[in-house]
Length: 131
Image (cartoon, rainbow, N blue to C red; front, side, top):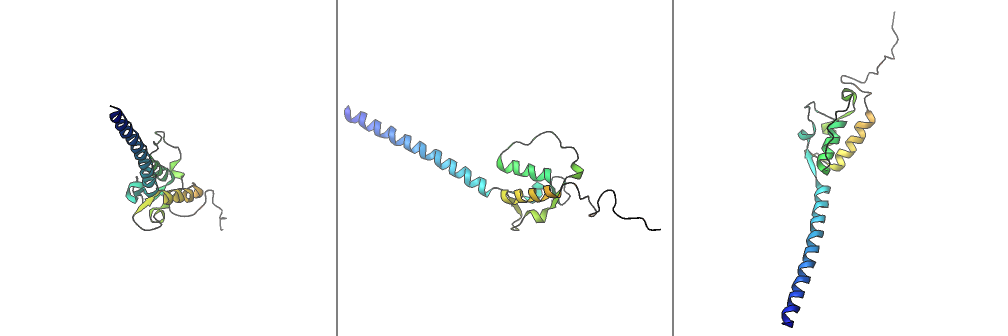
């Protein structure tokens, strides 16, 4: 009887250690997936204009990190900054990693809404009229 109890204690102790190891393994796997996570360039460009707007980049980052996207729409989207899709994929693998998306978001955010489609003209016009 004593041997049986000792054997059961050993088995339970080993199974507890194995369970703790499984938890650590799952955590390591989750971290590895987050580091290697990527999204296809076509999945980023939701409006199919060949550019990644700030809102599209943020949505892609949210998808990769598992954060839920906000349902409210940001006003003034027509003026938000953007970056060409080819410039998002810096290693040319056809996908965007979390680090590539973060860098692209920073670059597109810096541009802000100052640039409009069709050129680099500023609003208000800096040119003088010629007679």
